[in-house]
Image 1: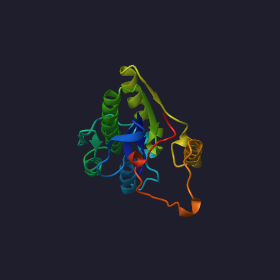
Image 2 (image 1 turned 90 degrees about the vertical axis):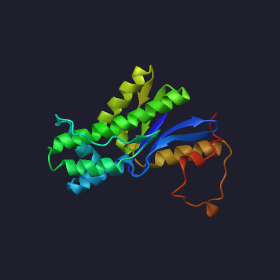
Image 3 (image 1 turned 180 degrees about the vertical axis):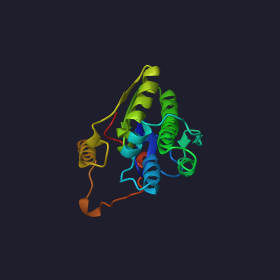
Image 4 (image 1 turned 45 degrees about the vertical axis):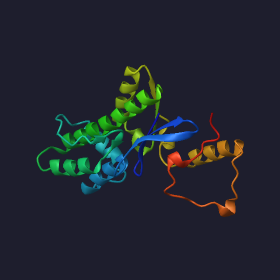
Length: 201
């Protein structure tokens, strides 16, 4: 099961029956976008996630924030608004801590549901937010409790990179997928679950 957490995407994905299936996703903004908008409101540098993670380590009190899981989907815009409002009455460290704990608990929950549904025992974290150590710890703890494991690639492979594009292209080429370069188009809205994955068993 892949927990894909970035600025533009938040999805729980698994490979089944020749395709990557999206078992859950954000209904509004990605987790990375949520963290960056929170940071932008406080004049933090971009991306804000690492700074929020550092500040959150100083938090000692949980501030109640909306926990928004609907089936296997998640929503972050309400949590963002509530976290910004909470700054009126709570310390920044406590709000950062609470924002992380709430959002990451939601992501861990829907990832666990996908593991239960698919019978898979391994979780792979991907996307820039996957570099957050607290998220890694929470997902690892859940996976181990299910007698499974969690894997995190090196940081330079968690963000946008040419290696992931090149590797996928090589796998596709080896599987006989051919494209006329002149007629190919970038499809920004191309969904993960719309691709026939002929290069995997």
